[in-house]
Image 1 (cartoon, rainbow, N blue to C red):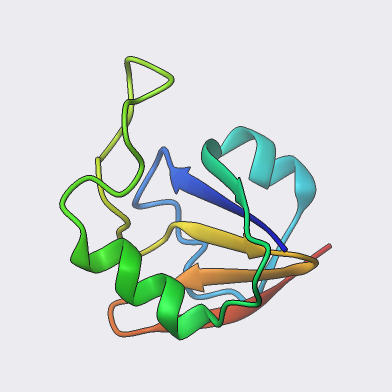
Image 2: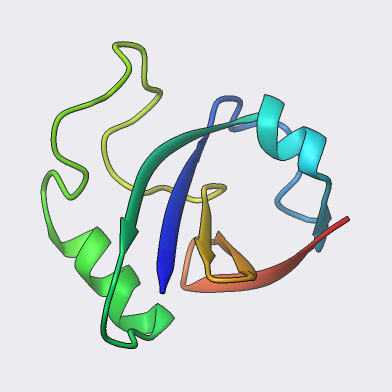
Length: 97
């Protein structure tokens, strides 16, 4: 299963309240930060606990300018075909239009 993490460039974008997001917004408002493929099935809860519990879960930054180092509310996690937005507590499944 392929997992991708996108960091939000603009935290006050107002996208957190909506349940839908377009591919164009994903390309412009978000930066692809991390991509990995897991051989075993992993649940969203386990992945979120791993990302929030580790001080530097994404290793060395590929880009010099990155808005933050750890996962924060407003960031997007892509697991296979599903997209999840990180909220203050937990994640919320969103649709890509």
